[in-house]
Image (cartoon, rainbow, N blue to C red; front, top):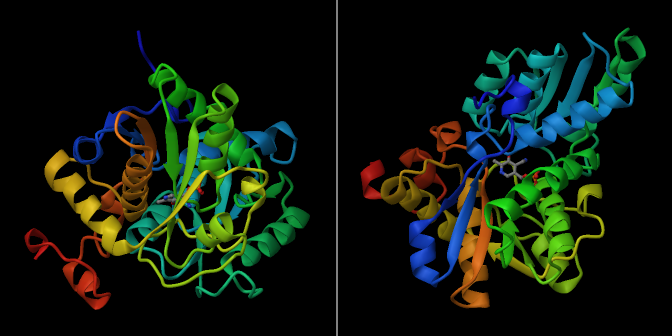
Amino acid sequence: MDIRRDFIDAVGNTPLIRLRKASALTGCEILGKAEFLNPGGSVKDRAALAIVLDAVGRGQLRPGGVIVEGTAGNTGIGLALVGNALGYRTVIVIPDTQSQEKKDMLRLAGADLREVPAVPYKNPENYVHVSGRLAKEMAASEPNGAIWANQFDNTANRLGHYRTTGPEIWRQTDGKVDGFICAVGTGGTLAGVAMALKERNPRIKIGLADPLGAALYHYYKHGELKAEGSSITEGIGQGRVTENLKDITIDAPYQIPDEEALPVVFDLLKEEGLCLGGSSGINVAGAIRLAREMGPGHTIVTVLCDSGTRYLSKLFNPDFLRSKNLPTPDWLI
Ligand code: PMP
């Protein structure tokens, strides 16, 4: 019998899928870790679960307690579903710019959703700070405890990937992996996988695929946090070195414009049957860049973070794409 006990047990152990076109273009094996197949639909199920289990282990959260978080959506969805499975309530603070599909899913999952204006991190009204204050208030009044998941600076996030995603990739490739690359939201995925892989083989190259509007490409390339431009991708694009990114070595940073990432997303859907969100496009475009730099014959792994169905109203909406002057394939019109 091959049965997963419950929702929690169904998180992780996702397939590694060979990406045909990216591999053909580069002469490398480009493999996508299919995180969109997690039960909550994204890579963030792993972080949500790791953070909740860590808080429970520390005695900070008891049955009926509350999980509070600021999130672009996917972490919130993961937390709400983990909460439903384990008996915790969730309060989610989200910037109002995030896709309607993710907000609808959060409400459906039973999260108490608080939308706030999208303002920079340095503004005290930024969603991250609002969620931190809310958690503090609730912790004082909730008899069963209230935690702030704090995904950006809570290293239980990267530990989850260090213990699961990284070792899975190593096993699935029989250790024949030469590079790993992905974008950063919190940095949990990149750092956790990098730590696990470098520990097994320090020669594995770790790449960063940074969207425009994020500051990490310049930081890892030139030592200075500097952002330019913007991206329609959601869940990625970081302006600071989070706790989850501390002490991580990035061998190959790339800056990927949406004009490069979106055609990758469209081709993956039309030519390979993989319906993915924008961050997956940044990741696969980044894997292609790393493959070109390393040369043919290498195996490079990246992350397919979530499904395109989470972005029908944006990434796959011709009116939205045209309003941003982004490539709009004929078949979409
Ligand atoms: N892609 C999507 C769609 C996400 O929601 C996130 C998480 N915010 C990421 C990528 C980045 O993952 P991480 O937080 O582990 O850096």
